[in-house]
Amino acid sequence: MKKMQKIQTNDILEGNFTLFIDGVEIPEYTKTTKITIGKNEYLENFDSYLINRKSFPNLEVKLTFPKSYRDENFAGKNALVKICDVKLTKSQNMLKKIEEDLINLNMRALKLSEINKSLQEQIEQKDKEIIASREAFMSKVQEMSAKADLELKRKKEENDEKLKEEKQKIKDFALQSFVEDFISPFNNFILAIKATENTDNQVLKNFIYGFKMIENQFINTLNSHNIELIIPNINEEFNPEFHYAIDFIESDEHENNSIAKLNSYGFKLNSRVIKPAVVTLYKKISN
Image (cartoon, rainbow, N blue to C red; front, top):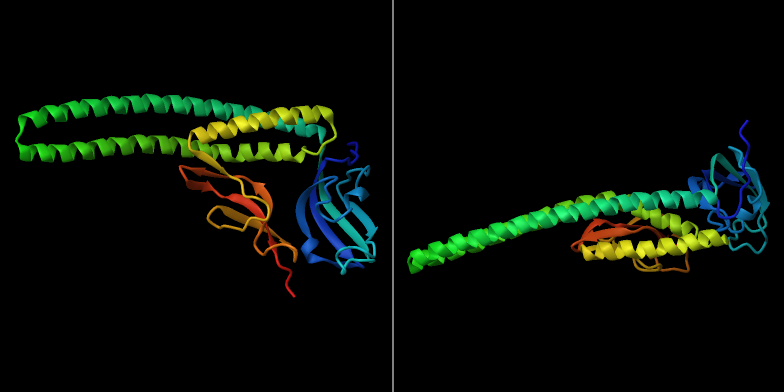
């Protein structure tokens, strides 16, 4: 029989959550989600009821909200939280996942280097073609009349522009393909780092410091290839051109449609959005 693990701070718990107040289900708290133990992401002070409990496939948590609870609909009432299909990821396993993501990113960085080398070779070849084309046109210009000279000049400019566009298309296509492959593991890497930022484990802290340096190196490399990260600030106004909302948090204390949480970075290539930043928004509480 599989031994049940105890739930500890910084563990990731995933499951189907259902909240009952005095026996009545609260629909807005019925959802499939994952929480980081200790951050009270589901309900205020909820995580303390989970710490040191065994992670059975199905859990029930009974609690009573204090009379001073911020939500007057819950204040002083008895509650039951059912969590089904529980999946627990231990915090000590996060370091292994970060290392795996780093290996994956290093492989993709190597691929970017190989793509860049190939691009340089193709660009050099195009440059040689441009030089050869220019020399051929100059030879013809010397042999023809003024009228023919103007026509040849026009054709030369069209030819140069076409070759220039071909070079840019080769580079843009290769970089866009790389960015699309790079987005998911890079965001996983960033989210894994953020999930362990508040850990008390000194070993994890040392690794996180190193991983942040690597994150900055990746960002500098992306910027050098005209790849920009879209990182909106908390409370920034939602902009559908650069942001994509996947969830809402009701609040009267924040501007409507302002950003409450950044779920994953977005990317731009040559100022064109490849993937918008994924965000959670504040919404005014309806009367």
